[in-house]
Image (spheres, one colour):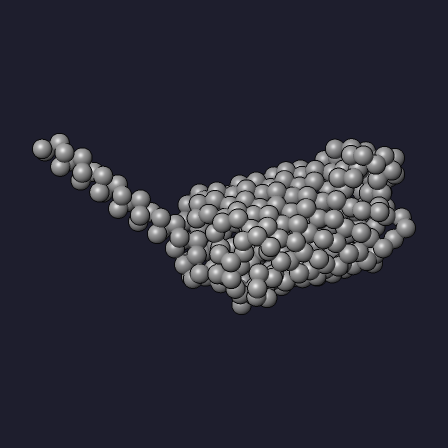
Length: 278
């Protein structure tokens, strides 16, 4: 009888502890009903009806021997605005200012709208979206692109990825550019999530010997996101080694993807971002 009573007491205590931990997890991530604005730096995530708000992101990047989506070859500053338009639509736009190591100064702009056609009504669960956008890069070449987004969020972990298909309006560029990215983060303690990000750029270099940006390039590195409860601020950081998976017969386009860079050198990029919820 005593053993049965003791076993029942242990079971009740364990159940209560698990429920309390679950509530703590939810509060730590979303005490004000808001999740991470931009947990990954190389993948764009969508916002949902349960975190319908606008935010301003300020980020800085330093890179060497990189190109394109990996970062400006030198130092770059970016200001972005991101918001929920309603009916599962997310708006994202940014402006970049690049400081080349040789003293040059360039700018780039981009804007897009993404719609979740699967999920997107709640913060947790799976979401799949499709977006359309346009940009002008550091070499003043314009382009249009589509972005496919996929993500899954839970109280203790999250993952997300993008597939981007871009068409640049320049005869010296590729007919189509392919960029893909993937990230995973797990809660370490409280509002601190850590994991990794991986990215592939100019993937058409795997089958095109004359790929215009010097070949396919890959990145993998650590990822960190901190979104404190009851705070309008959040912080993200990522970066890692950038290396060429293939080498094209073309040395480079001479545009944003080849600023003081050769197609035979590997490099690295480091990026950090602060977000403020409006």
